Image 1 (cartoon, rainbow, N blue to C red):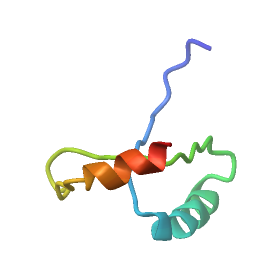
Image 2: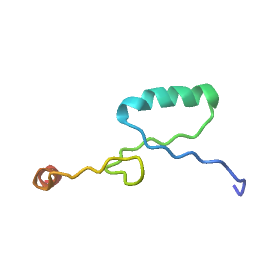
Image 3: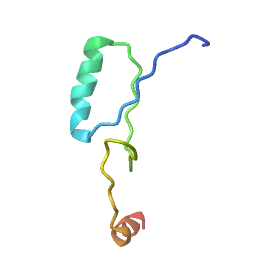
Image 4: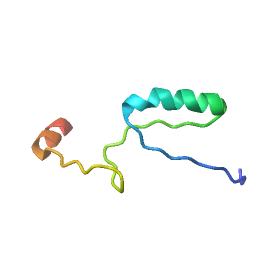
Amino acid sequence: SKTARDVLYVVIAKRQVRDLVNLIREIDPNAFVVITDVYEVLGKGFQTRVPNLPHELMKLR
């Protein structure tokens, strides 16, 4: 549809997902929600993680 919609995009820790979903259901039971795993987040407010490259590469095998 060509109707304008508000979109809220958040990045949270896995341990926070259940609380956020419960809050969304309270506010708008018909809300469209997508939950996905994220490998890395960059930007203000997020800590930089330096991966252990050999360990990370072994996980890909």
